[in-house]
Image (cartoon, rainbow, N blue to C red):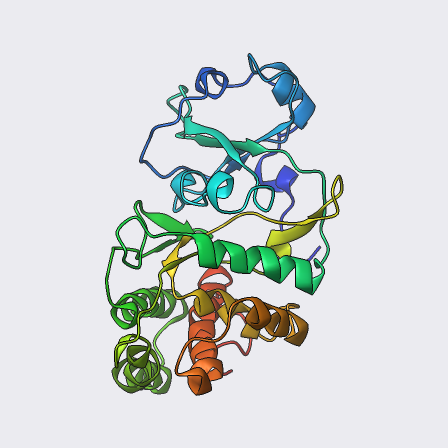
Length: 312
Protein backbone atom coordinates (compact mmCIF):
# COMPACT_ATOMS: atom_id res chain seq x y z
CA UNK A 1 0.00 0.00 0.00
CA UNK A 2 1.48 3.37 -1.00
CA UNK A 3 1.78 6.41 1.26
CA UNK A 4 -1.19 8.02 -0.45
CA UNK A 5 -3.50 5.03 -0.05
CA UNK A 6 -5.65 4.25 2.94
CA UNK A 7 -7.61 1.21 3.93
CA UNK A 8 -11.18 1.37 5.19
CA UNK A 9 -9.80 0.70 8.68
CA UNK A 10 -7.54 3.76 8.37
CA UNK A 11 -10.46 6.01 7.50
CA UNK A 12 -13.07 4.49 9.82
CA UNK A 13 -11.15 2.55 12.50
CA UNK A 14 -14.23 1.02 14.13
CA UNK A 15 -15.89 -0.15 10.89
CA UNK A 16 -17.05 -3.72 10.57
CA UNK A 17 -18.96 -6.18 12.64
CA UNK A 18 -22.67 -6.07 13.36
CA UNK A 19 -24.63 -2.93 14.03
CA UNK A 20 -28.25 -1.83 14.06
CA UNK A 21 -29.61 -0.37 10.87
CA UNK A 22 -30.97 3.16 11.00
CA UNK A 23 -34.76 3.31 11.39
CA UNK A 24 -35.26 4.95 8.00
CA UNK A 25 -33.30 2.22 6.25
CA UNK A 26 -35.74 -0.27 7.70
CA UNK A 27 -38.69 1.88 6.69
CA UNK A 28 -37.23 2.23 3.20
CA UNK A 29 -38.00 5.92 3.06
CA UNK A 30 -37.41 7.07 -0.47
CA UNK A 31 -37.57 10.85 -0.71
CA UNK A 32 -34.80 13.37 -0.07
CA UNK A 33 -32.86 15.80 -2.21
CA UNK A 34 -29.80 16.36 -0.03
CA UNK A 35 -26.33 15.03 -0.92
CA UNK A 36 -24.67 12.94 1.75
CA UNK A 37 -21.26 12.19 3.28
CA UNK A 38 -19.35 9.10 2.20
CA UNK A 39 -19.98 6.05 4.34
CA UNK A 40 -19.93 2.49 3.13
CA UNK A 41 -21.65 0.20 5.59
CA UNK A 42 -19.40 -2.80 6.00
CA UNK A 43 -22.03 -5.32 6.97
CA UNK A 44 -22.92 -8.52 5.18
CA UNK A 45 -25.96 -8.37 2.87
CA UNK A 46 -27.46 -11.32 4.77
CA UNK A 47 -27.24 -9.40 8.03
CA UNK A 48 -28.92 -6.37 6.46
CA UNK A 49 -31.68 -8.47 4.94
CA UNK A 50 -32.52 -10.05 8.27
CA UNK A 51 -33.28 -6.59 9.71
CA UNK A 52 -35.56 -5.48 6.87
CA UNK A 53 -39.25 -6.34 7.34
CA UNK A 54 -40.77 -8.04 4.32
CA UNK A 55 -37.43 -8.64 2.61
CA UNK A 56 -37.88 -12.41 2.85
CA UNK A 57 -34.14 -12.62 3.46
CA UNK A 58 -33.46 -11.13 0.01
CA UNK A 59 -29.92 -9.84 -0.19
CA UNK A 60 -29.57 -6.08 -0.52
CA UNK A 61 -26.60 -3.76 -0.48
CA UNK A 62 -26.89 -0.68 1.73
CA UNK A 63 -24.67 2.20 0.65
CA UNK A 64 -24.22 5.80 1.76
CA UNK A 65 -22.81 8.20 -0.83
CA UNK A 66 -20.40 11.11 -0.94
CA UNK A 67 -20.97 14.62 0.42
CA UNK A 68 -20.56 15.82 -3.17
CA UNK A 69 -22.77 13.07 -4.56
CA UNK A 70 -26.45 12.38 -4.62
CA UNK A 71 -28.10 9.02 -4.24
CA UNK A 72 -30.52 10.42 -6.85
CA UNK A 73 -27.96 9.59 -9.54
CA UNK A 74 -28.22 5.92 -8.62
CA UNK A 75 -31.85 5.34 -7.86
CA UNK A 76 -34.71 6.81 -9.92
CA UNK A 77 -32.73 7.66 -13.05
CA UNK A 78 -31.25 4.43 -14.34
CA UNK A 79 -34.62 2.90 -15.23
CA UNK A 80 -33.72 -0.75 -15.18
CA UNK A 81 -37.19 -2.19 -14.87
CA UNK A 82 -38.35 -0.33 -17.95
CA UNK A 83 -35.28 -0.12 -20.16
CA UNK A 84 -33.17 -3.20 -19.55
CA UNK A 85 -34.06 -5.47 -16.62
CA UNK A 86 -31.24 -7.60 -15.17
CA UNK A 87 -28.54 -5.43 -16.79
CA UNK A 88 -28.57 -3.00 -13.84
CA UNK A 89 -29.40 -3.72 -10.19
CA UNK A 90 -32.98 -2.67 -9.49
CA UNK A 91 -33.25 0.09 -6.85
CA UNK A 92 -35.36 -0.81 -3.82
CA UNK A 93 -35.13 2.16 -1.46
CA UNK A 94 -33.16 5.32 -0.81
CA UNK A 95 -33.30 8.21 1.61
CA UNK A 96 -31.82 9.96 4.64
CA UNK A 97 -30.84 8.40 7.96
CA UNK A 98 -33.01 9.28 10.92
CA UNK A 99 -29.76 9.79 12.81
CA UNK A 100 -28.98 13.51 12.60
CA UNK A 101 -25.18 13.46 12.96
CA UNK A 102 -23.30 12.71 10.83
CA UNK A 103 -25.63 13.43 7.90
CA UNK A 104 -25.87 10.15 6.03
CA UNK A 105 -27.99 8.81 3.21
CA UNK A 106 -28.64 5.28 2.08
CA UNK A 107 -29.35 3.51 -1.16
CA UNK A 108 -30.43 -0.12 -1.39
CA UNK A 109 -30.61 -2.11 -4.57
CA UNK A 110 -30.92 -5.65 -5.84
CA UNK A 111 -27.98 -7.84 -4.90
CA UNK A 112 -26.00 -9.46 -7.72
CA UNK A 113 -23.33 -12.03 -6.95
CA UNK A 114 -20.77 -10.70 -9.40
CA UNK A 115 -17.36 -11.45 -10.79
CA UNK A 116 -15.46 -8.29 -11.64
CA UNK A 117 -14.22 -9.16 -15.11
CA UNK A 118 -14.67 -7.75 -18.58
CA UNK A 119 -17.96 -8.93 -20.07
CA UNK A 120 -18.07 -10.55 -23.48
CA UNK A 121 -18.27 -7.70 -26.06
CA UNK A 122 -21.29 -8.86 -28.07
CA UNK A 123 -23.62 -9.52 -25.13
CA UNK A 124 -22.43 -6.43 -23.27
CA UNK A 125 -22.82 -4.02 -26.19
CA UNK A 126 -26.20 -5.51 -27.10
CA UNK A 127 -27.58 -4.65 -23.66
CA UNK A 128 -25.95 -1.23 -23.65
CA UNK A 129 -27.32 -0.35 -27.08
CA UNK A 130 -30.80 -1.46 -25.96
CA UNK A 131 -30.77 1.11 -23.18
CA UNK A 132 -29.54 3.83 -25.52
CA UNK A 133 -32.13 3.00 -28.15
CA UNK A 134 -35.16 2.34 -25.95
CA UNK A 135 -34.82 5.04 -23.31
CA UNK A 136 -36.95 8.17 -23.71
CA UNK A 137 -36.07 11.54 -22.24
CA UNK A 138 -39.08 12.81 -20.23
CA UNK A 139 -38.60 16.29 -21.69
CA UNK A 140 -37.24 15.33 -25.09
CA UNK A 141 -34.06 17.21 -24.14
CA UNK A 142 -30.55 16.42 -22.94
CA UNK A 143 -29.96 16.45 -19.19
CA UNK A 144 -31.48 14.90 -16.09
CA UNK A 145 -34.36 15.50 -13.73
CA UNK A 146 -32.33 15.84 -10.50
CA UNK A 147 -28.78 16.97 -9.66
CA UNK A 148 -26.35 14.07 -9.74
CA UNK A 149 -22.67 13.34 -9.88
CA UNK A 150 -19.79 11.75 -11.72
CA UNK A 151 -18.15 10.02 -8.78
CA UNK A 152 -18.01 12.78 -6.19
CA UNK A 153 -18.14 15.57 -8.79
CA UNK A 154 -21.40 17.44 -9.20
CA UNK A 155 -22.14 17.53 -12.93
CA UNK A 156 -24.24 20.13 -14.69
CA UNK A 157 -27.26 18.44 -16.15
CA UNK A 158 -29.90 21.13 -16.66
CA UNK A 159 -32.24 20.30 -19.54
CA UNK A 160 -31.09 21.66 -22.90
CA UNK A 161 -32.48 20.98 -26.37
CA UNK A 162 -29.03 21.53 -27.92
CA UNK A 163 -26.49 18.78 -27.36
CA UNK A 164 -23.62 21.10 -28.33
CA UNK A 165 -24.78 23.61 -25.74
CA UNK A 166 -25.28 20.95 -23.06
CA UNK A 167 -21.86 19.38 -23.58
CA UNK A 168 -20.14 22.77 -23.64
CA UNK A 169 -21.55 23.64 -20.21
CA UNK A 170 -20.66 20.22 -18.85
CA UNK A 171 -17.08 20.32 -20.15
CA UNK A 172 -16.42 23.89 -19.02
CA UNK A 173 -17.68 23.17 -15.52
CA UNK A 174 -15.30 20.21 -15.21
CA UNK A 175 -12.40 22.25 -16.60
CA UNK A 176 -13.00 25.08 -14.14
CA UNK A 177 -13.03 22.66 -11.23
CA UNK A 178 -9.92 20.85 -12.48
CA UNK A 179 -7.96 24.11 -12.80
CA UNK A 180 -9.05 25.18 -9.32
CA UNK A 181 -7.65 21.90 -7.96
CA UNK A 182 -4.50 21.38 -10.03
CA UNK A 183 -3.61 25.00 -10.66
CA UNK A 184 -3.59 27.30 -13.69
CA UNK A 185 -1.67 26.51 -16.85
CA UNK A 186 -1.99 29.18 -19.50
CA UNK A 187 -1.22 27.04 -22.55
CA UNK A 188 -3.54 24.28 -21.37
CA UNK A 189 -6.41 26.70 -20.72
CA UNK A 190 -5.95 28.40 -24.11
CA UNK A 191 -6.22 24.99 -25.77
CA UNK A 192 -9.54 24.41 -24.02
CA UNK A 193 -10.78 27.83 -25.12
CA UNK A 194 -10.09 26.74 -28.70
CA UNK A 195 -11.96 23.48 -28.12
CA UNK A 196 -14.99 25.33 -26.77
CA UNK A 197 -15.05 28.06 -29.40
CA UNK A 198 -14.16 25.98 -32.47
CA UNK A 199 -14.00 22.22 -32.00
CA UNK A 200 -17.31 21.68 -30.21
CA UNK A 201 -19.33 23.69 -32.78
CA UNK A 202 -17.58 21.90 -35.64
CA UNK A 203 -18.16 18.41 -34.27
CA UNK A 204 -21.41 18.61 -32.34
CA UNK A 205 -23.60 21.20 -34.04
CA UNK A 206 -23.80 19.12 -37.28
CA UNK A 207 -25.55 16.38 -35.29
CA UNK A 208 -28.65 18.59 -35.15
CA UNK A 209 -28.19 20.46 -38.44
CA UNK A 210 -29.60 19.97 -41.94
CA UNK A 211 -32.74 18.34 -40.61
CA UNK A 212 -30.96 15.76 -38.46
CA UNK A 213 -32.67 14.73 -35.22
CA UNK A 214 -30.45 13.60 -32.34
CA UNK A 215 -32.16 11.33 -29.82
CA UNK A 216 -31.32 11.94 -26.14
CA UNK A 217 -30.33 8.51 -24.81
CA UNK A 218 -30.06 7.45 -21.19
CA UNK A 219 -26.35 6.79 -20.61
CA UNK A 220 -24.56 5.15 -17.72
CA UNK A 221 -22.12 8.05 -17.74
CA UNK A 222 -19.08 6.38 -16.15
CA UNK A 223 -18.84 3.05 -17.92
CA UNK A 224 -15.41 1.54 -17.43
CA UNK A 225 -14.29 -1.92 -16.38
CA UNK A 226 -14.61 -1.22 -12.63
CA UNK A 227 -18.33 -0.50 -13.14
CA UNK A 228 -19.13 -3.63 -15.13
CA UNK A 229 -19.16 -7.29 -14.16
CA UNK A 230 -20.62 -10.73 -14.79
CA UNK A 231 -23.66 -11.99 -12.87
CA UNK A 232 -22.50 -15.37 -11.61
CA UNK A 233 -26.04 -16.73 -11.45
CA UNK A 234 -26.77 -16.09 -15.14
CA UNK A 235 -23.45 -15.37 -16.83
CA UNK A 236 -24.93 -12.13 -18.15
CA UNK A 237 -23.21 -8.72 -18.02
CA UNK A 238 -24.28 -6.19 -15.41
CA UNK A 239 -23.36 -2.55 -14.84
CA UNK A 240 -23.61 -0.36 -11.75
CA UNK A 241 -22.46 2.90 -10.10
CA UNK A 242 -23.97 5.08 -12.83
CA UNK A 243 -23.66 8.83 -13.39
CA UNK A 244 -26.74 8.79 -15.56
CA UNK A 245 -28.28 11.47 -17.73
CA UNK A 246 -29.75 11.82 -21.23
CA UNK A 247 -27.00 12.41 -23.76
CA UNK A 248 -25.82 11.69 -27.27
CA UNK A 249 -25.35 7.91 -27.12
CA UNK A 250 -21.76 8.15 -28.43
CA UNK A 251 -20.84 10.15 -25.33
CA UNK A 252 -20.98 6.82 -23.45
CA UNK A 253 -17.96 5.63 -25.42
CA UNK A 254 -15.81 8.64 -24.56
CA UNK A 255 -14.35 6.98 -21.50
CA UNK A 256 -13.39 3.95 -23.61
CA UNK A 257 -10.94 6.18 -25.53
CA UNK A 258 -8.88 6.84 -22.40
CA UNK A 259 -5.57 4.98 -22.58
CA UNK A 260 -6.00 3.12 -19.29
CA UNK A 261 -9.49 1.76 -20.08
CA UNK A 262 -9.80 -1.88 -21.13
CA UNK A 263 -12.91 -1.57 -23.31
CA UNK A 264 -11.01 -1.74 -26.58
CA UNK A 265 -11.73 -2.11 -30.30
CA UNK A 266 -13.94 -5.23 -30.03
CA UNK A 267 -16.37 -3.23 -27.87
CA UNK A 268 -16.52 -0.31 -30.28
CA UNK A 269 -17.04 -2.74 -33.16
CA UNK A 270 -19.86 -4.61 -31.45
CA UNK A 271 -21.52 -1.43 -30.19
CA UNK A 272 -21.71 0.15 -33.64
CA UNK A 273 -23.12 -3.09 -35.06
CA UNK A 274 -26.06 -2.56 -32.68
CA UNK A 275 -26.29 1.24 -32.82
CA UNK A 276 -24.79 2.74 -36.01
CA UNK A 277 -22.71 5.89 -35.87
CA UNK A 278 -24.56 9.19 -35.91
CA UNK A 279 -24.35 11.34 -39.01
CA UNK A 280 -22.05 12.81 -40.09
CA UNK A 281 -20.45 9.41 -39.53
CA UNK A 282 -17.04 10.56 -40.74
CA UNK A 283 -16.78 12.72 -37.60
CA UNK A 284 -17.64 9.93 -35.17
CA UNK A 285 -14.10 9.14 -34.04
CA UNK A 286 -13.34 12.82 -33.49
CA UNK A 287 -16.55 13.21 -31.47
CA UNK A 288 -15.62 10.33 -29.19
CA UNK A 289 -12.14 11.78 -28.70
CA UNK A 290 -13.80 15.06 -27.75
CA UNK A 291 -16.07 13.30 -25.26
CA UNK A 292 -13.05 11.58 -23.71
CA UNK A 293 -11.79 14.98 -22.50
CA UNK A 294 -14.56 15.12 -19.91
CA UNK A 295 -13.51 11.75 -18.50
CA UNK A 296 -9.85 12.81 -18.40
CA UNK A 297 -10.87 15.92 -16.49
CA UNK A 298 -12.85 13.79 -14.05
CA UNK A 299 -9.75 11.66 -13.47
CA UNK A 300 -7.60 14.72 -12.76
CA UNK A 301 -10.22 16.09 -10.36
CA UNK A 302 -10.49 12.79 -8.53
CA UNK A 303 -6.73 12.17 -8.46
CA UNK A 304 -5.04 15.60 -8.27
CA UNK A 305 -1.55 15.72 -9.70
CA UNK A 306 -2.05 12.56 -11.74
CA UNK A 307 1.09 12.35 -13.91
CA UNK A 308 0.92 12.96 -17.66
CA UNK A 309 -2.87 13.22 -17.94
CA UNK A 310 -2.82 16.99 -18.51
CA UNK A 311 0.08 16.66 -20.97
CA UNK A 312 -1.79 13.97 -22.90
